[in-house]
Length: 156
Image (tube, rainbow, N blue to C red; front, side, top):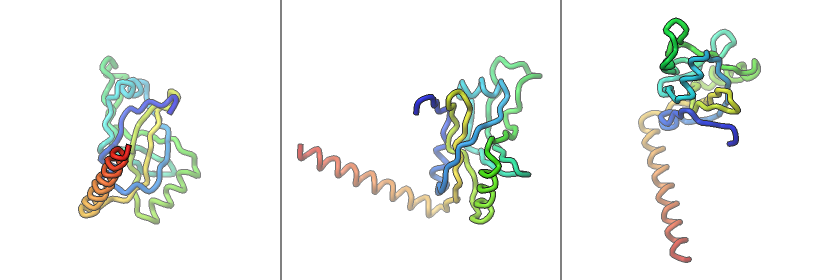
């Protein structure tokens, strides 16, 4: 995409959850956090989003302190960060989360036209057996694609 720079992705989320829907949200950040993001000093693995009091929050996102920031003007690496969503989007997400017993996990963090964005997924957790089935299906699909590729290459 033009004007998009990916900072971090959460590959583990795609393995541990069935992704049902995607939402893009902005983040409320401090200056030192933005500078750390530009250096990709971030970890998404343990992060999740929640809705409290009509506002969406990203919890567990670790943004390392910027290396030259002063201690008094720096930031807490583990603080909750507010997500920027429209009120009707928040209500729609809250309804789906409550009715379908889903969770919101961040899939990727990126800059889009200079603004920090996070791609959130409404997801259902997979059980251990579900993970194995998903891995087996992915491997079978990959082998089939390779066999088709070899067959097409042989005809040329």
